Image (tube, rainbow over all chains, first blue to last red; front, side, top):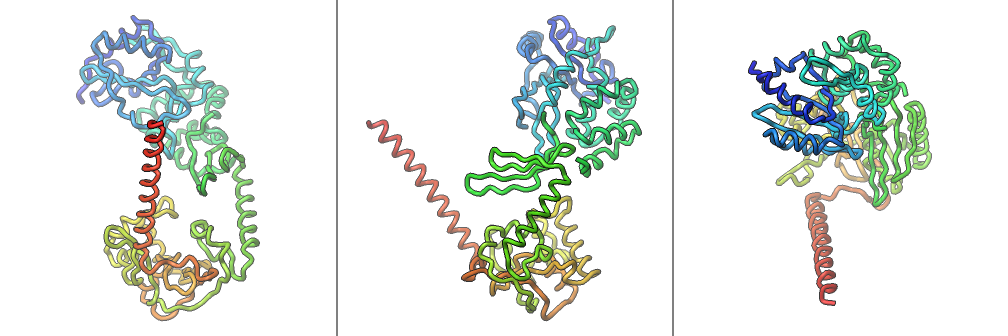
Length: 213
Length: 244
């Protein structure tokens, strides 16, 4: 597997940190960052919309190019801010300004509920001795991984499953349930049971055939 | 609050009015009529569905008009014809006389004998035309699967199974619903008379034209003419405004 030089990844996070950009690393599946990121993958972060232009200036002055997002033609609903995509020597950064998911059938981008958007900044986790400074709280990361697997990818790959298994026991189930209610409504209870039992492959089918509401 | 899992169950746009039904998984069923929305639980929606079916049968107060005899998506597709319905009868027709509508030259619709049906061709192994057909009323099923499933059902259970008859209009032999069933019967060797449902409309209305492609062409030309006339009117209007 051809990988990125970890120094390139560290440099990117240095740009964010030195310019006081308000950001959170959305995911680090299989702990690929910073040493094992495949050349086929990109880095996914969320940035506060207020810092959009500060980020743009910081990256452009550090020789990054702003390029067309691979999903630029996908419509954004509910006034969602369009995602941005930056490139430096093949390293791609996918930037969102709200935690999104794709609608199941029509495939447009939609932002998750505002409560989740607000709480992801309020309850972000500060990390030390790593190139990045912030991660999502366990509860919001679980919501993010589940929505990504169910709506965007439409399957649970092993990296996502490992991460879900790792953080689910650490999460506060009451808080998690409240967040999931905002996306999955009455399916939340069933979904939590399936995650608890690690029956990820059954989730999509149970969701699509769910009728107890 | 936005539900990412909204499934459009049905829509009907008549003139300026928009009606659609959405299943918001886990949340509720939404009935939208223009800017008006009703939220229902799945149980309420199923009750509502039963009431609508009963109401429709009472509104179309004609002997033999019972929804159990029809595919509901077919009834939806002919809903605007129903006020003209005068009679529904069970009759026997010679299966070899049945006619289907298919795509001819340039994809324009033509009438052909049932022996040229894309379904029958598919049952004989030639899937090309059947694969290209845009199927609207069977979800999660490929065209090939549908052909095979209907054939299997007809050979296992016979025809008409579960009161589902082939439907014809007026005195025509054109199949309006049931091409898969008719093709399966022919492929399984059935000849002679078979029972069908005939729907008779006032003044023989809603027949398929002998040359359906001509109607389509006429409509396309009329639509183009209306568009061009509208454009010419707008150009003229702008010209007059500039002149003044």
